[in-house]
Image (tube, rainbow over all chains, first blue to last red; front, side):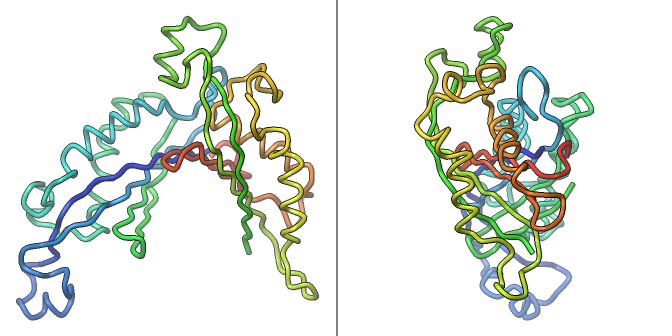
Length: 139
Length: 139
């Protein structure tokens, strides 16, 4: 069974890569390349998978998942300028694809500390940048 | 092809195991263990998988699916205290996981192993927490 918990964070970013010229960046990223950045209300869905534990009736202890996501993601991402405030994005363009990879790396790195058993496992994450832009990956 | 029908019911529940102390239940279920219970506006999404009938153009008659969900899920559970009024929750904890599995168990006998078959039950306890129960059972 899969259990999905939804989280939110507000953050700004600018899409720009040193690999391209100013003009190429403008052509590729459009207004997302505007020099001072812009922001979104991101919606992050985190999905855990596993059998329902007999007794507790739970797949995942939600307060533990909340604490993991809060400490590893929300604390650093919420109300931040991703390009400047997060080390990962010094050399990585904070597209939603890359934001997802960073979030997944952070959750995976600490998952077994808080969920030491075989289950639950991280099944995947889904990131909604706007209502019209949604990104999804399996772990 | 997948088709999904959505339905809603409002119900109260309390998440606690009789074998545990109040402190242990609070540790496991948080405010969900408050002894007098609390309620949610549950949203259930039932997904069927099949091929459109060449004549009717339908995978399944959505009116029939609506009636089936109404009879097996909504009428027994809507505006009820699950622990006291809806078996098996007199014996097992009505977590979102267990309620989703029960909905699956109530719907499943109405479909065969061929097509259309029951593909997934998604149960939202809140906008920020939902579970998916599908054929894989353990995953």
